[in-house]
Amino acid sequence: MTDIIDGKAFAAKLRDRVGEQAAKFARAAGRKAGLAVVLVGEDPASQVYVRSKHKATVAANMESFEYRLPADTAAADLLALIEKLNADRAVDGILVQLPLPAHLDEQAVIAAISPDKDVDGFHVTNAGRLAVGQSGFVPCTPLGCMMLLTDRLGDLSGLEAVVIGRSNIVGKPMAQLLLDANATVTIAHSRTKDLPAVVRRADIVVAAVGRAEMVKADWLKPGATVIDVGINRLPPAEGEEKGRLVGDVDYAGAQDVAGAVTPVPGGVGPMTIAVLLRNTLVAAHRAEGIDLPEGAL
Ligand code: NAP
Image (tube, rainbow, N blue to C red):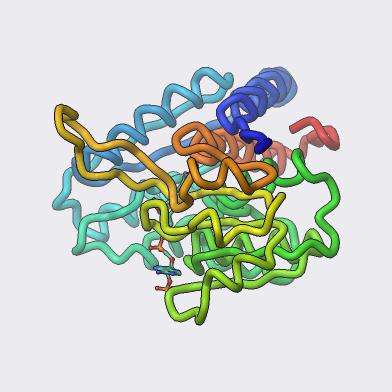
């Protein structure tokens, strides 16, 4: 019998804990923790994400600052806004919603964010800190996956973990986190030979590819814990307006084989915003020199 890892419920509890600690922070600091979200252009998916981040931030007793800029915003104007937010003591976390319009250089924009306010964990300073084991900010999605894994498995020492995907925002930081937790880590990607055989040796599979239901049930080692990061929309079936959302793993097939698996939607997705709020609250405590009790989040 395969367990379903309920990321939605886990994320709700995490948001509650963040909300409680955020209220304590506001009393101690005399101000709320603040998250600034910058959206350039009118990408519909990004608008949905920004709206839900705003709602979740306010619900967690934090201040939400939203900046919506036109799609033709000049790089200099965006960088000037980031400079202003870097200097603003009411702002603890800065998130620039990606993707940016093509004329803007994403790496240059991320580099402009103060690493101490980089709650997305995308700045090279934070990537470097993660690589060498210093505390910084870890990208929200892989940190959320890690929370689900340790909640399920406890100690990951010596377990075989296969991460499929090597992006800077998911695959690579995920592998680092697993390595820090003493798993034996393999990173697979589009050039990996015999991916099914690589996946078959894994006690932990993290799929972050972006290919609908690519990981088949017969690739999985029986009992494996499967974290499905992928979000893919299938073409609409007859009578459907929109196609179904599916992950990178054949979820139905995995039911007979995996020990536990995250659903899509309702698995990793809700963890991302919850961890963003957590990172923002951590940034606020660091900015004010206030201790966050060990294990509070
Ligand atoms: P990405 O930057 O496109 O990276 C995809 C990775 O998958 C690449 O490393 C690529 O290998 C690898 N890949 C592609 N085809 C493959 C194949 N046939 N076999 C093995 N590996 C293959 O994507 P991403 O940003 O990491 O996102 C991955 C997925 O997670 C997407 O579906 C995205 O929507 C989802 N996502 C979800 C959340 C969330 O909140 N739940 C957050 C972020 C991303 P190469 O490097 O060799 O090209």
